[in-house]
Structures are given as structure tokens and as C-alpha cells.
Length: 312
Image 1 (cartoon, rainbow, N blue to C red):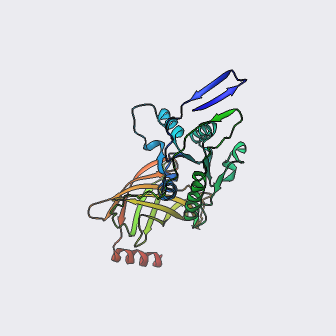
Image 2: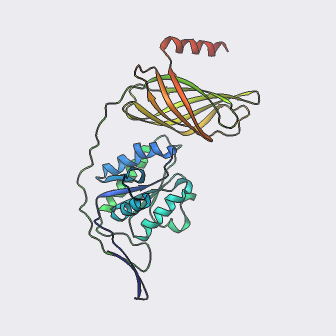
Image 3: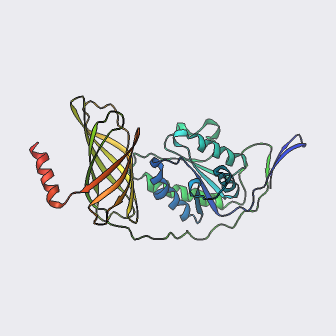
């Protein structure tokens, strides 16, 4: 039970329900963070022996806030991704904070951690560090285990008394179901029109051989602005699940800047055709989505393209 006392008269009683070996993840439902969740956060939580739960993975007939509220009450620990200060994330973190739940906050920008929360534990990570995913995963698992080694539930605010029976610390990591993933390796090309300016963007995606389920890849984009060519190279995080691939930009550099002042990172949700010659799906762009089709270059067509580029 959880009680808030004021002058020994007024009180609010919250029934926590059974506290389970679960970790509730609070984060924006955005493609930018999808691969971070799938390839870093979830594996780190499962390595600590906890069942990972996120709001969009709960399927009941009641209002989503009721599902989230129940998951927060019954979770052993909370992980909150505070980057970009998403309002829903801040609200749900506040609920967990008031309940005295142990919270591990993540951020790629330390200014996104509210001043009132900075005394609490948080992990800063730099997405420009090529090893940020591995480093974040190890640190998150370490902090989760440290939290579970304590029999106390965190008390963050004065006037709140929490009495709870905590589950035993899990002894083993959670074993994930392994999928037989399709080989996406190769060079893929596509093009799309920007949403606002209707400017054609030509792109080349390079998927390395022996890529595994999670990997880093690159996308080179070429477009013309005010009669000058701009070439951008995006480093992208990719996740493969059976015949589907999700790709999200991490950072970018200009190979040729032209008249471009900035560039917004891209994301793609794609599937491979049965003959494995095309990837089709949607490009999630700054101002909306576009349907895209990537075509795989054969060895001969790749050589012809390189020869054409050299001649130009």
C-alpha cells in the first residue's frame, strides 16, 4: 500500500498491486527511438533478468493511461528516456516519481533532464560515439542490478510512505526468442520527393554482409538546392526482424554541402520482396511520410554506376 499523509488527517491511498520483476520503459513513440529501444534498452533490461514492458505493447480494452498507470504501479523499476522532453514521458515519469519507484533516466542531452530531477540517477549517452549503444546497454544493466540488490523502494518526496513487498532478484537473463532473419546485404538505391519543396532526393543504402539482427549502416543522399548539389551521408542504426528492416538516422556529415544549411535525419520501415530484389515501405521524413522502393544493385549494375560517377 502507498499513502500520502497531510497533517495526519488528509490522505490518498494507492493500491500498488503485486510488484513484479518487470521494468516499465517510458519513452517517445517515435521512429528515432525505436531502434534504441529494440537494440539497446530492451536487451539491457532482459540481460538484468527483468521483463521489459512499454506502453504501446499493452493491448487491453481500457484507456491506455489506465494500462500505463497499472504498469508503473506494479513495475520493480522504471527506465525513462528524457531526450527531447516529450510531454507524455515527463507526465509518466512524474507518476513514477510520486510513487517512489526507482527510476533510471536516459538522455542524449543533459539539458533535457529537468532541474528538479538531476539529483536522481541518470545516464548520459552521446549518439556520435560509435560505441554508444554498447556502452549504454552495459551501464543500464549494471544500474538495474544495483537497484534490485536493494530491498528498499526509493522515496523521492517528503510526506510519502511506501510499504511494498518486492520480488526476489532474478538470477538469470531472460532468453530471447531467436528469429531466422533474411540476408539484406548489398547496395540499394531509391529516390523520393521532399514533402514541402518537392525536391528530388536520390539515395544509396549500403547494408554490410554478415550484418546480424542489429547493425550500423550508411545512407548517402544527393539532392539539388538553388542549382548546387548537396551530398549527405547518414550513419544509421538498423534492426531486422524476419523479412522487415527498420532503419533510423543517428547522425550525418556533409560530403558536399552546396546551399544546404542543415539536414533532418531520415527513418525507414521496409520489407523485402520474395525475390529479394526490392525493399518497399515508407520513408519517415521531416514533414511527413513517403512511399519508397529500394532496388538492389547487381554486381554489374553497381560497377556501371561507379564507372558513370567516375566519368562525371
